[in-house]
Image (tube, rainbow, N blue to C red; front, side):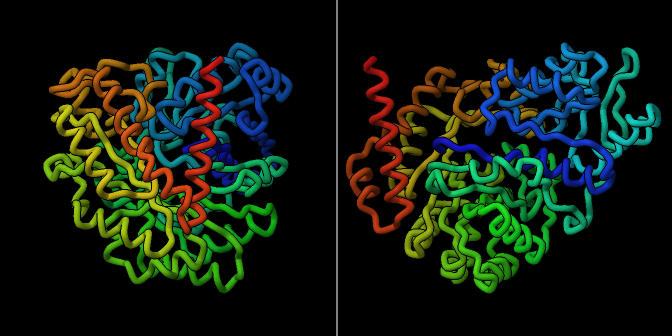
Length: 458
């Protein structure tokens, strides 16, 4: 995906809610990535801030060790600091985390705003932990799991993320592959969760197989605020399932009516693109320039095992063609490493990606993220050979198939990228494309290839 520095959206969402509920609380957001902090300087920041609570971001499984290391730093500085982690990984492995890492005091399971705010209020008084639904913690040597918390029914009741806490960094957030580096980049949450139940997806169980949406007005207000206040011009919709129905049409019309000069990225299903082909011109006119679409695999049997109903060759090909016709850059994703995969089936996937011909392709190794059905099955059958969470990034193979070792999967993954991006006709076509995003993307990739090649010479 290239170089990028995103705003710390999850932390800002928690901070926004916490400050609304208790404005007297002193909240500091430390964005180590945008500030360029190494571990030593982060340690100094924590020491100077002298916080009562440290809550590091736990965005994904591959980042879990970073969150734990922040907790370790905090405890080393002052053992009385309370440490709190949350997110998908720690929700799924709450008990294992507390048993393995004494530096972690509390785990916020599931949706965080209300739970974290209640926990902070209880920690101020020093009593009442049993009243906080959705947390896991220790009581002497016992691990306590408080009851689940109900999901927030109306997302429009949530305040905007506390972007003012990182105001000085706002113009420095960027996504080099998608937009010019000087184009400020921000994140928009239009909905939470997804009604689909793909077996490899950690989002679906985290949001309890449901989708809740924010109103078009709230979304538009947030885009306008970020654009007018901070100059943000490129937006990433975090929605797992964006949907291309009437709600999307309202958002697009609102962008035009408010005269917002913005561009944006979203994720969509190929069957949804085909079913709402008439909406695509409106999306492009409203600034939708980039769409990620999951094609996964050419095998109907593999797609069924992933529970990817509605994803098939016809819908996939039509979706790519429709996006190209409407000037929307298509990024296709493909998965290798299914239990049945062999060299022959991966070769079929490579041919499939070339036939579909999205503007770019992302190939991933099937990764058993904690909380997913894939993880449960792999764990039960002893398929997982690598339990280093840092490698759970969809780039490293952590389990073999019936026919391929982990090393062979890794080699096949490299061949997938080499086959797709090593095609000189595709490179020339991309650099000469009439679509400015396709052209700029392939120029960016070419520059990176040259830079990497020169670096490897020395």
